[in-house]
Image (cartoon, rainbow, N blue to C red; front, side, top):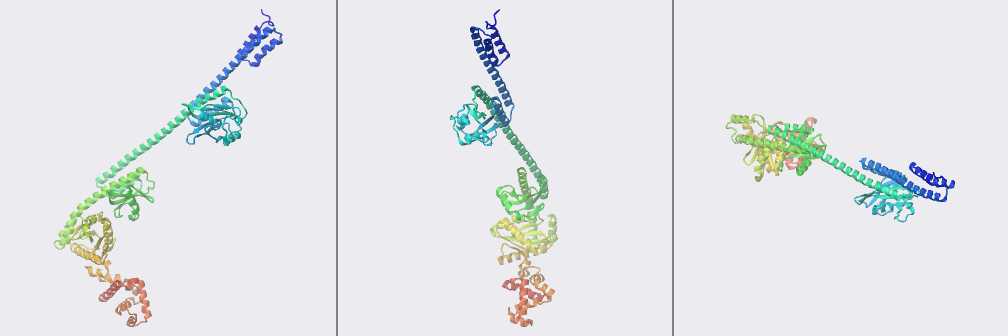
Length: 631
């Protein structure tokens, strides 16, 4: 058996035991020291020292393996965490947090390139306390990070502030100083040879980063680059999917809107084909759009729905015609109803100021259907009017030949000649007479009136409803017919009459009114005999003497009756004396100032033009007729 003091075997066995137990290096170094204390021979000590040196080498190698194993385990854990993260911000935070943990540094951070600006910017930090540092931007080649981004190589420095390898800038150095960083390591995140970011770890005290630590951070950066690219791809996929879903929703909504519009169009068309009238169409459209609908004809007259006349819509209708679409008008929508370029009327929708595109298209389709209905009604009206026009022609040509037969024919055609009617005679320039007949049919559209060409004019026969005077109806007809033709139309009105013979006489009176309007230079106007002053007394079949006197002298007669004055007598004396105040005051037996005051009162009641030649003639004629009738 070997002597323990002269043999190295016990020491060698002890070294092996310490290595197997994972003892510290200090424990291994204690073995040769113990042999020396026991006085081992030099040869034995040399053998023990060599064995200790080799044992320490093995200890270091085992330590490196254990550390590498721990780093790889941490790296694999990091890779798992990154692979599990789907949100880009979560991935970036995980990368920075793991880099700080693996290297045990005070801070870690990551920069990303800004392609538009041509530099990199701070994206995520961990352990940072400086706002200035967190908002840094690094140009390519500036500072440690800019150099890493430019060269795609890792760089480390134990003291950045004194390292001359890097291009120092005032802003970068200020940020590093404000954060208190000294030792910095930066590695690129590479994807297909392209730098997509830079990962940093830094301490606030000097530190030399080992090659192993640089390699470890590079390995983390490689995993991080893949995770970052995956997260971006997922984000892009989610965005594309969201866009596709949104587009699909738009397509579905559009398809639903188109289908709804088609169904609504079919429903409205069916109404027209089954004989619905304009109010029925307006009610159906109102139900479809959830509002109130007003339908007007080309002249602005209301055919269905609520609302006043359409004069206020002129600008909106002009815009609708030019654009070919419905337009907003205050809190309502307006759409022109057209047959080609011919305006037939308009639609107005109330109560839906927020009309969306689909409903606007439905509203515009309804305008097309409305045009179809109005054209259909007009065609029917024109056909009926041609038949009724023959009746009107016979009535005007020979009213006394067979009044009972004419009346019976009228009833069969829906025209009751025994009821009061108004006769209008319309004349236009020779080149417009052909179109005037068609315009008259459109003017009477929606009424029970009839029209026919007779001589060089067009005659219109309207049921009298008392809403307007004959002169007002003539003026309205002149305006609307002129608007349809684009040239002046003169309209004369006869008196309201019933029966074939009386209606023929009313027609003759209307013809005389038209001629009088032309003679008076009032081409394009509409009037009745009552509107023509004393000419009306001469032209009218009834010779309305009392009415003319009342219309002309009415204000004076009423004033005299109410005040007991003598304004009519004074006016008669004034005209009789040739306008002489002196002779008039002698005839009246009053002071000249009294005559002046009475004439001033007459002017106040009759207007400033009372003494003009035309007006003076009417007044003198009225004064003489008053004497003749005993007034």
